[in-house]
Amino acid sequence: MAKEVCCSTQLIDGEGNFNVNGLEKFMNSVKLAECGLSYAVVSIMGPQSSGKSTLLNNLFYTNFREMDAFKGRSQTTQGIWLAEATGIDPCTLVMDLEGTDGRERGEDDTTFEKQSALFALAVSDIVLINMWCHDIGREQAANKPLLKTVFQVMMRLFSPRKTTLLFVIRDKTKTPLEVLEPVLREDIQKIWDSVPKPPMHKETPLSEFFNVQVTALSSYEEKEKQFGEQRVHVKTYLSNMLRIIGKSRQKPMVFPSLDDVSGCNDEIISYEFKTKRQTTA
Image 1 (cartoon, rainbow, N blue to C red):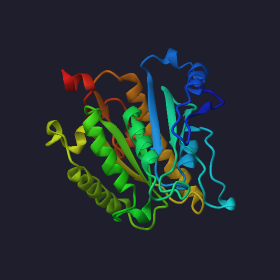
Image 2 (tube, rainbow, N blue to C red):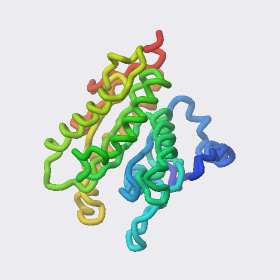
Image 3 (spheres, rainbow, N blue to C red):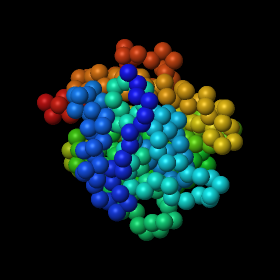
């Protein structure tokens, strides 16, 4: 049964300190131990003030603090915050990461954003990557340097586990998604091809580590109605993904693509999921 009140806590503060007591209280509050293996983890990363917290609140009915546009564009989320999604089965934990490229940390202090991004990719089943539409095609924008670092570290520390990367293009312009998506996918593939790989993963394709999906949303502030309609589409896709993950965490899974969202169910075969157990067997 869906809960009416969202539970949340700061998991890691802006200095990188892990909130052990807060996590224990959170786990007890959401009765995480009772979920067993039927749970999922979703996180979001992206530029500061790009609407990450707002998107999570609209998709999962969480209560993350949102930026007040009338007070100016500044840092809202510090560190990493954790909340339980409301009205979604299975139990879904949602992480809101501090925005990247913020003036508060400066252009040279990227250690925390790299560490938090790696943490999110290591523990999440689905990672939403928030990005501005006008950043597509730019070399230093769209979290490209961050993705390059994270891809490299992921291959050195972890076996393939097929994390879903859902790139969310924000404030979409008149350019059709069918035009934007190939450019973005090509850029992602170039990043993967360019990173140094350990011997065991010299020939490993991107698809062994990540299930890449792309969607787009209109401006939340200027085209609220369109944003709301598109949000429903994304939420439906995520709900089906989470249901599959929750039911089959230790079994081979099949993932739907965004194109299949209208008739999404457990039988849709779009991507093969290989668990760590299968990989090391």
